[in-house]
Image (cartoon, rainbow, N blue to C red; front, side, top):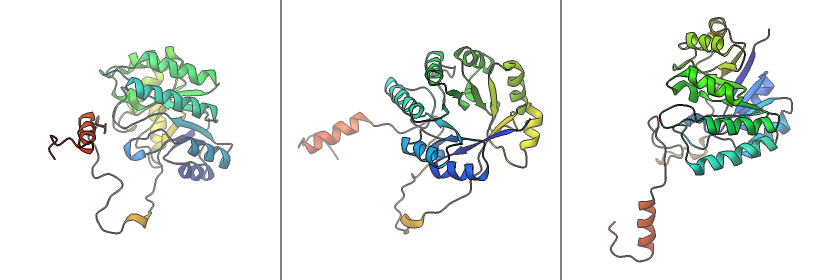
Length: 256
């Protein structure tokens, strides 16, 4: 059986390059620096036009950090998912957890049902790798009708988690596809396939590209001054906004 390999892409440019190089399937994201966020609709449309035969899985993730979303964030995700499905993605990738790290069955089921209503695939992300009980998580995903789950076997890399991935394959027993990912390269992919019993792989294949148009040496940085700690993300502070609003209205009681 031929192994299917999926390339993790951070842009339309990435996806088109991967397709031309022979990729079977891509996961289309934006902002891989933060683990992969929802791509723009324009990116999906551009890839569909340039590579109509390419199978595309579109990430639906509104921000960095964890996978426990506010009602507003979830509403945004539903809108994004529907737009992606309406414009030709072959599947959507997502992850929903409660604050305690267990799978949010309600939201997971709703997204799986949405994808199914379009005749498309649903993929649960590596959110499963931080759940306290992967068997219980798989039970929920199977019950929800999820097509596939991306995992590193609850370890930093798929090589380290190969034993757990193999156990997931046995436990799933064909009821859900298991897709190994994280740290898979040309020099270890055959060993991972052998150890896990999987027939598909999720891989990155990036090089460093350069756009020096803003690198003029004056200290201005558009890529962020630091990487946030795991579980952290930026959020508007309403108190700061209120303070600024009062200042601009001439409130002299506000201290700079």
